[in-house]
Length: 91
Image (cartoon, rainbow, N blue to C red; front, side):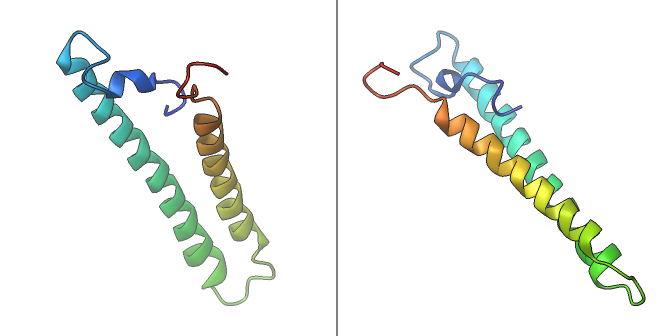
């Protein structure tokens, strides 16, 4: 969701309708909340289902759930900041 939006819509001076920037900011906030909820869910699964239960032979499924979610989140931010245009307008 974050990589699909135009970052120029976040500024008030870049769009003709001021409501567009408000909608873009709300969308960005909602997308960031979903990302944080996904990370929190993976931490909950790792801790509650795999690390805290006695008698489980391996804890790697919980750890891999968290690490996979963390890597997807990092890749999203790397792609977002790696594709931002430079300040001088050249790539």
